Length: 279
Image (cartoon, rainbow, N blue to C red; front, side):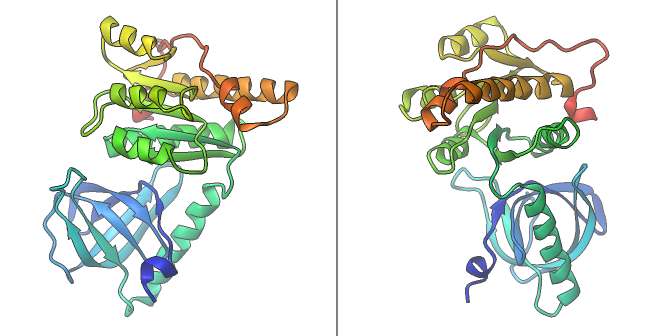
């Protein structure tokens, strides 16, 4: 049986380090109980075996595995370069470790979230920090049923938005390869099924950029460096708006989207606030 069918993969960013090359830091793109895809600029040969360590802040303690390179992606089609890897059959202990990671991550990622957030960020480390901050919101501030997905650019994000299940909020950076955050918002507003989708924009740009995005219906901006308080506050305000609407109307899909239209103030970092990427 095809291992990809036996062990379905799901999108997930985990940090990847290599024994003997600890200064190199890569990231996974997806994960299954049998293998994973690693975004990397390193050169690997098919069939090569490598020992690596997977980890994730506040989610996964370091897990050491030996993997075998199955295929390479050179990135010539605009996608990030990387390698698909699997745990060899003669490494049953490592296969069990990876299967355990997949089970634990699937447990953290609620199988049927009541509220889905799509993070759009091309920097894998920053995306990991943002995701960790939102998981902290879910776990420590009593916000259950929060599902977090990550897309590395606007093209991947828009493709995800066109597929079920529906996303409730998009949190996007502006400057990204392939499709920028501004172009993503333009595509969202031009698509009738997504036109009212709330979008939070993370930006270091000036007034002209904000005016353009405001004209596209974006009313919630977070300025870089983003603090945990602002990121969690933006999402919390949308959650509160959704909860208030559900008390007043039946939970129809259209009503849910309208209830989440962002009508919040622009986030302002406090002097003592720590950036989410530094926590």
